[in-house]
Length: 198
Image (cartoon, rainbow, N blue to C red):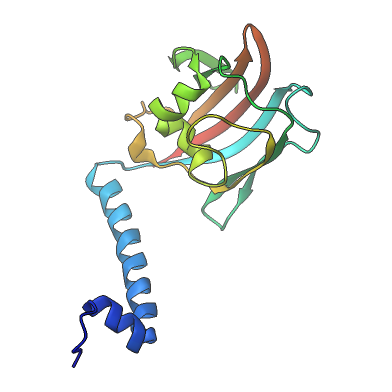
């Protein structure tokens, strides 16, 4: 019997280390179940999966030559987004970001107009648009709040959480264009291709 003033959890951790391991595993399983259940309970009958990513603009003033953004297979059914780059100098406070969604047509052309975020400061974007920013900030060492200083940044095995987004219309193919600008100059642009699997 525990006669000290320590809590029951502290006592278990000290006396029964195997219990701590099992308890941690049980909590991890419970969290995974709750995430899966919340997506199911919310009525989302589809998954948003990465297909490809292409950088179309990268300013050498800000980004080193080692910039890589790619979609890889984590397993047979789960593609993930990976990214690594060196930021050569801090992003300025007035840098802006825009995200535009384009829909894939039958001729493999992408049509604009599906949706577009208003142009906003990157620092505000990180806080006010977590469904987009979270693709980067939840899976690596990207900052969730400004400033974003010079240094090496990575994103590992990023996936899309469908429950963060409004329901998408029944269109299978999408392209998301993300553009960073300093004043009126584009310093970075990437196109991220996704598909909707029902």
